[in-house]
Image 1 (spheres, rainbow, N blue to C red):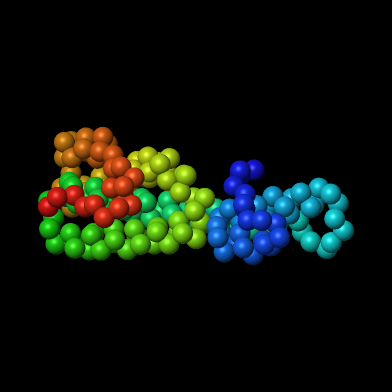
Image 2: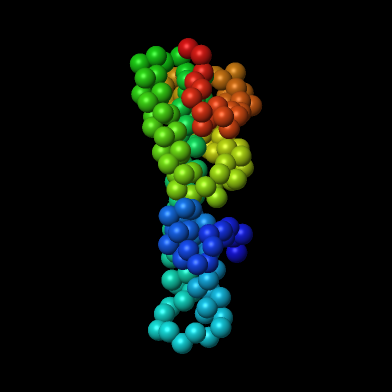
Length: 167
């Protein structure tokens, strides 16, 4: 079970947690449903599947955030290693759009922030594979570029802040 819980006062009601941290709310509600099922509550509810569906909403939030991180890293890598100049404005625009979306995601679900460092490493590997494949398709790949793709890591602030590689 996920250790994310809603820290809103109980008298505030579950809707406060829903508004303040959606991801944590989904995890807490799934746990509450499973606990209610264990007590033998006599309601005509498919407890386990309802809990699973609510929990999956939280997983979807996390998956979307990881995807945005991967996209930012992919485009930052392209900005650093690709000699192409025409796609640069589009890459920069995509990075900015994803950064704005992530700001909103982390405002809606602040409990996801603690996972960002771990996800950066995982998504870097995926992004490097995508960039390598893309560069091969455009005749821009070389062993030296591949080496850079494998060793380059961006700090969290590089990914989420306003930083771009120098042109």
